View 1: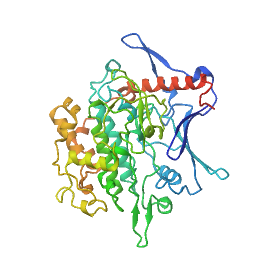
View 2 (view 1 turned 60 degrees about the horizontal axis):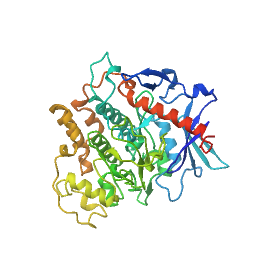
View 3 (view 1 turned 30 degrees about the vertical axis):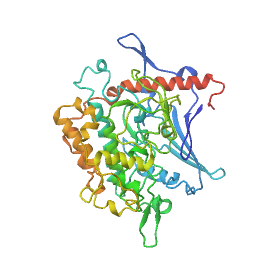
View 4 (view 1 turned 120 degrees about the horizontal axis):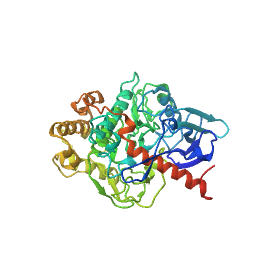
Amino acid sequence: MMIHIAQGRQGDIYALKSRDINENDNIHYHKNKDEEGQLEHSLASDEIDVYGGLKEWQIIKTVYAPLNGVVIGKQPHNIVKEVNLLKRINHPNITTLLRYTFNNDTFEHQLIFPLYAITLNELFQDSSFPFEYEHEQITHIQNNPLDIPKYISYQLLQGINYLHNLNSPISHLDLNPSNILLDWNGLLKIIDFGISFSLTTKDQEEFSNCIKEEDNEFTLFCDVGTGSYRAPELLFSPIRYDPLKIDLWAIGCIIAQLFRPFESIEINSNFGSESSSSSSSSSSTKSSLIEISNNSIKEQFDIFDNLDNLKFIRKPLFNSKYGSLGLSSSIFKILGTPTKENWPDFENLPDSSKINFPFSKSKKLLNYLPELNKFNNENKNDILEIIEGLLKLDPNLRKNTKEILNFKWFNNLPLIQSNEIMRKYLIIAKSNFIRKINEDTTNPQGRVW
C-alpha cells in the first residue's frame, strides 16, 4: 500500500507499507480507558521499528533530477548532496536514511526514511502543548509539564551540536518546526537536509549551495531558511555568511516559540513560510490537537489531512507575513534597529542602505514570551538568557550550541521515558494516522496504490 502524502519542494512524498499484512494488522492498536471512559489509541512496543518509525511503514521521497542532483533554478536544493550528508550522520536526534536509489532511465531519485509521528509545527497548533501531559500515566517519577520545553530544546540543541562539531561541520540552514518531528518513541528528530551546507565535503564542492569564484572564495545563496526562522543577515543579500550562525538564530526562534501565546491568526496567512500561499486547518482552541496542514508542512514528511482553515497557533516570535522586508521590521521592532554598537558589520551588507528603518530600541523579550511566567525566577532568567544569547543581531555574538547546553536549565533533565512525557501527543498522532489510512482505503477517489 502506498499513500501519496504531499507534493514537496523537490518532488513527491509517499507513505509506503513495506510489506503486505492483513487488514486487521493495518489498524492494530491497544485500547486504554481514560478517566472519562473514552477509548484512546496507543502504540505497542512491537509497532515501533528500531529507528523509531512506525513498523512496516516507510516514507519515500522521490525527486526527478540528473545523476548529480543539480536542477537549474532549484538551487540550493540538491538531492545528491542531501544523500551524501545523511550518509555521514549518525545521531539519535537526526533522521535516518534507510536506503537511496537512482533510476538512470527515469532520473528518479528515491530516499527511504522511517515514518515518524508528528511535527513540532503540528504540536504548536495544540493549545495544550508544551505545558500538559497525562499525569496519571506517570506515577513513578516526580515531574511536571514544564519539563516538556526543556526536553524539546535539549534534544534540538544536541542534534545541531553534533552537526556543528563534526570534522567537517554541517549547517542545516532550514531549521523550522516543520523539519522537527517526534518519532513514535517520543524522541525528537531533525529532517530535511536538502539545502544543508558542509563546505569541505566533496559533494558540497561539486554540487554546492554556493558558487565558487575565481579567487577560490565561495558566494553563498542567501535565499535559504523558512519564513519567521530566517536570520536577519540573510535578508540583506549577503554573498558570504557563517552558515552555522544561521542555525543558531533558528534554534533561538524555535525555543522562543515554546513560550509564545496561543492566539488566532489571519486565515490564509503565510505565517512562518514565505513560500506558502496559505495556512489551513480547522479546530477549536479547546480541542486536544488541531489537525493541520499548510504548504510548508506538506513539503515535509507529515501524514495528516489538509483541512480548511488554521485559526489558532502558538505564534512565532517574528512575523514573515510580508516577506523579507516585513520580517526585518518585525525583528528590529523587538531587538532594536541595527547600530554600530549592536551590529557593526550591518552596513557592509549589500542591501543594508536600501531602506531606512525607523529607529527602535530593543524591548524586554519577556514581554513577548508570556508562558515564561509559569517558571520560577531562576529558570525563567536562565531560559531568557538562552534565547537572548541565540537571537543576537550580530551573528558573531550568538552563543554556540556547546555554550547553550551548559546553562543551568539543562542540569536537571526529566528522568522519564520520552514516550511517557510525550504520550498524549503520540496517541493523537496514531489515531490520526489510522483514520488517514481508513479514509484513503475506503474512498474510491483516494490516493492509495
